[in-house]
Each structure stands twice: as C-alpha cells, then as structure tokens.
Length: 190
Image (cartoon, rainbow, N blue to C red):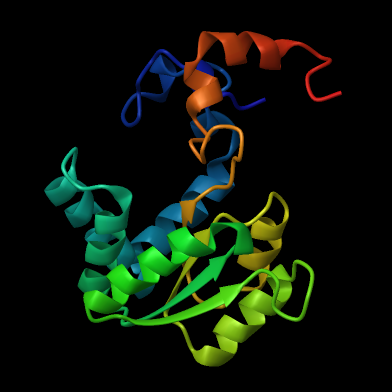
C-alpha cells in the first residue's frame, strides 16, 4: 500500500533505491508515466501549473487565499467566475462576490437551494449554462461538494470548506491535540 505520509526519504527524484517499499514510484508507474505525459503536453495543465507557481511565489506568506484566487484568475485570463455557495454562508459569499466584481470579474453565483433543498447538481448545471470559466466552492456540505465537482464543466477551486464547529477552519482538529486524541477514538460522532 502506498503511504507517502510515512516517507522519510525525501527522495522526490533520483535514485529510486533511496525510497521505501511503499513508494508510488515503485508501485504506480503507469499512473505516474501518464501524469508526466499530461503535465508536459496538455496546454491547460501547462498554463495552470505556470500560473499556480507564479502566484505561490509572489504571494507566499503575504496573500490570503482570496487574493491568491484573484491573482490566479487574472493571470490565467479567467474573467467569468462562478460561485457555488451554501445558503448558510450567504453573507460571506456576498462579500466575496463584491470583492471579485470590484476587481473587474464577471461573477455568477448560485445558492445550494436553487429549486428548493440542496441541489449541487443544479448549481453545476446553472454555472455550466452560464459559461463560467472558473468555479469557486464556498461552504458546500460534505458530499454536495463532491457532486458539484463531478458535474462542473469549468475547473474549480474550493475557497471555503464548511465546518460549523471550527468556524470553517477545517485544519483546527488536526493541529489541536485535544481534537486529535478525540478523533482517534472509535466512538467519536456516535
């Protein structure tokens, strides 16, 4: 089984003999070879990679994620942005849309409750029909985000992951010793 999280070799390239037996370079060669072919020939992948690297370099430890998003969209030439949001984060989404529009983007937003109830497939279809070039997920429920990403025709990024307990700071339970210990127990959530 592949477990990069357990690797201490830090042998990202070079001598495969320095890697542990669970290294994907030993067990997933077909997938990695296919990925390399895509990474070096697909024009969209090349462009996104180039822009992502430039945004990471220029904004490292200086820009919040919203700024990275705007810079990424500008540098890739995406002008029409879609926002798929949870109705519970309407105020935050309104602020985001106003910021994006203030930066010259055309923004199409669609709530999860389009046509009543949660409808992530409907959100994707509305944004597809609107011809968005980049979609932004704001706080869709677990599972609904998966369905939205499955049906979104435009590339997408997640800006906010909903977590009502932590104020949408989903990494908090992983850095807090109390939560880490509690989550290791088998009866959590029961």
